[in-house]
Image (cartoon, rainbow, N blue to C red; front, side):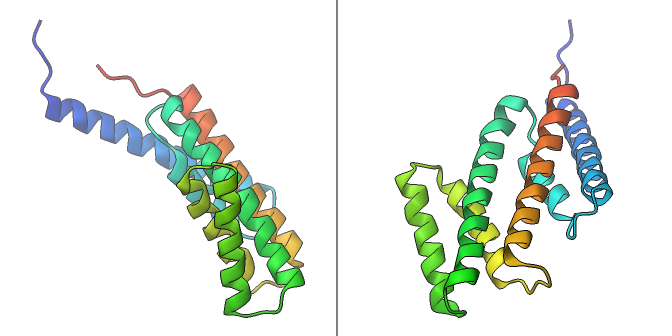
Length: 160
């Protein structure tokens, strides 16, 4: 039996992965838009971040993204609600997020994802309540994660 050229196999896998990621991102955007979320683009962004070649690889990234986002939106909304506006309040919230992630022994990427969510909730101008913004941000990320995991589970990448 002849072995396959690894370069061809690599191209086939990349093509499959790119196609699967594009479908997952489109489904994620459609779901978030269909639900009428104010910023549905966050769902496909999350889908693109967490979609990996296998469910085993996608799960830890998804978990870190979800936990970090939950902590980030909560601390971001609390910072806006209860602290005076400004860079010092923002920096204090980012510091507190890092310390909480450390106490919970979360992966550093959870802190990174949480910092992104906190920054969006704290610094992006919004017309709704800050708690509403935090909630929608968390829902967007959750949709992106669920779609990514579902597509990865149903549409598996196989080598060979």
